[in-house]
Length: 264
Ligand SMILES: Nc1ncnc2c1ncn2[C@@H]1O[C@H](COP(=O)(O)OP(=O)(O)OP(=O)(O)O)[C@@H](O)[C@H]1O
Image (cartoon, rainbow, N blue to C red; front, side, top):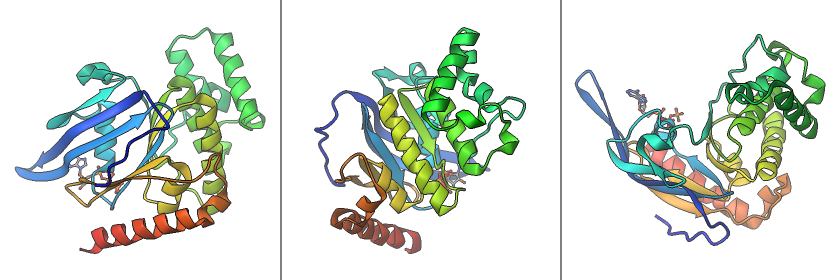
């Protein structure tokens, strides 16, 4: 594993320490995660990439507190065990918008759950809908939205509820290439506006490089951290950064590793 000292960011938001997980199904054991260490610092955008089925979602579930590890610890903002639950926002690949609520009402969902005063919540939602180019859709229902728009609404909802630390599980997997790129740029704007910390899962090497400050590369199951690689590209990111020497070399390194893990 490549050692990496984080100098740009300071406060540690997440520390995963020696996490292992074995599922037991029909008296059979499936070792999924083996001694995973990783961290996310304040304001950092960190991505996990790894072969299909290696245990990425399981790891995110453990961070969120939906599952418990067999060994190891997860510390979020200094809180461990059950205390960490509810400290992060978690968004799945499917946007899961409520079909009976308009876009504005969907974006307000978390604020309503938190019992923020009705008018105040709507004012805030409208401000962000406008700032992030969604105001024209505010009174639409989810079934009238494209896939890319639905993901934007779901992301904005997650940011408004848990603005400071988000877990995103392959949120753009179902989008076509151009929509995906514009939604990635949109997410980076949102991340910078909220100064959030993000732990992101993707299968897509280009996406990992484009978005991240650092990438953790997992081995096949039982997943271990094979590398933790800093992405040495300027911010704010532009699509042309992907053609730079650094990005191309990193992409080749990741492709070679992941192809080897997928076939061997
Ligand atoms: N609750 C569970 N009980 C038993 N096995 C499970 C459970 N959840 C996941 N698994 C198994 O654990 C392995 C890892 O699954 P997981 O979804 O974490 O991988 P992943 O890397 O996110 O997959 P993908 O790349 O397909 O998104 C898979 O073989 C899966 O079938």
